[in-house]
Length: 415
Image (tube, rainbow, N blue to C red):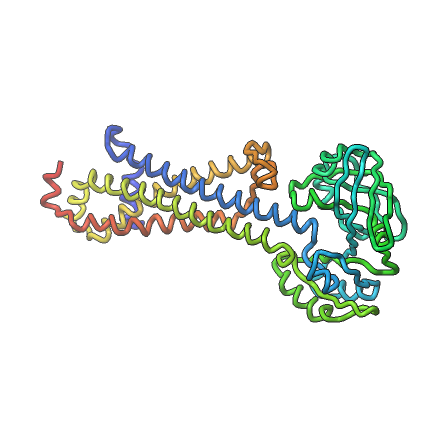
């Protein structure tokens, strides 16, 4: 067994005199490491959970990649593009594409006896993936949407329903203004969803693809575009480049030009905001590492001063200064290890309680979520543990050189 490790283990295990100054210093250093590590893990867990929750909500409304008319991407108006079965087969055949669904947008006005509200109607067909809406459904049920008939079903957000005083099962009229005049449709509210993403909840509802096509006077396979889900989000840019090579700059039979863009390009302001959270994470990690480092440095200095006579004896017996330094560095590793273990347990308990009870609540109008989301990322947590241990030991190397200035003869008279 390594002599430095053996002596450090004996010193750490020795409870000795409870009145020793080093004992509370060890407790403080252990607590500093535990609190710092727990805060770092919780910070990373919450930030990752928040970023991925918001990302998934944005993707839920716009999927990973959209293929549409070039003019649609350059303006807020939904220009039509023909996406027939042959185009769908080409898109589905692109490596990395997992699912394709068509949609059509139109603008209208919802009206009740007391209120009216302008809103976008998103027409979707039977192939549309409703799993995101289902996971955020507040009341009612998911209807079946059609691309060949007007079923009159409508999915509204809770924000819109509250403004219009609408509940599930109500009949509501909608008016659509176009070059050919005003069209009126009656819908039945089948379900109400709540995502807390005000940008979408306040401006979007879902109905049949067939209905929105007819309201826009689009015949055949004309629609606003197609939404694509990729098999692996990590490879979205690679899939987007493949789509650009095969689909972009081609045209339909009416001369409309195809183009595509990823969800990150569609909503750059949201994802830029989310990326700013990384700066906060690094600041918190740096501060917590400093807290752990300073408490360990002060604790080590107190321990060295208290063990001055022991250091002198070890040197008098022929132990080299480097070996003595290694002894106290091993001693510090034991303290840091215990603190890390306690910190991991604290973080795990808090994360488990939050996931089960959601006791940390947030204002959804500001943060888009009603409770602090958490994500368990074991590789990230292990990396934080390893970095904490490594950095804490490195910052202790300098103070440990104080041992080199302790002379055996003088240390024997040290009180």
